[in-house]
Length: 148
Image (tube, rainbow, N blue to C red; front, top):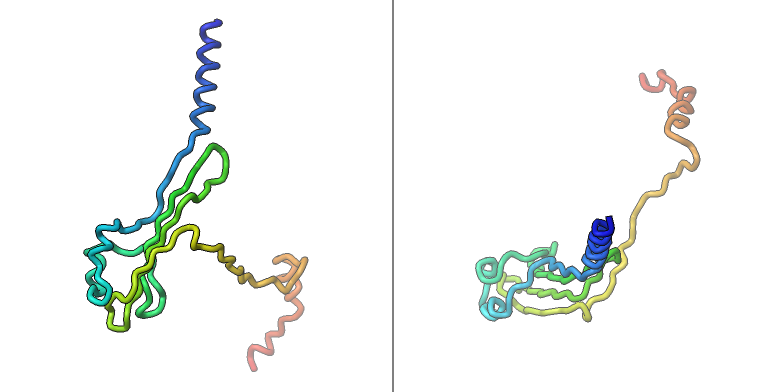
């Protein structure tokens, strides 16, 4: 019995310690420096980029907008909320002709939090449920108005 209890206690301690270890996860894709060196500003075209450095994580919505490669590293520790410990963004801009005009690299220290506004339409009917709204319209319906 004592041996079984000792094993159980050791197993619980091992699981508790294993649950509190740092787990690092990488998200996204950043082209390696060697691949980025092959991109020549003023010479490389938009069509050549996927073969040289890969497809971007995001693209600008406007025509002629840039390509963005985003990569981040997250630290997961126990029950805490995951924390972003590093982020890199490679932004490639294009001229109107489709040729690379600029390559920029940004890190987590260059970023800032952008608060997105939620555009939710408020209900103009407060405190009235769906059934009450439907039943309330029974007397307001006039079939003669439809025929006109």
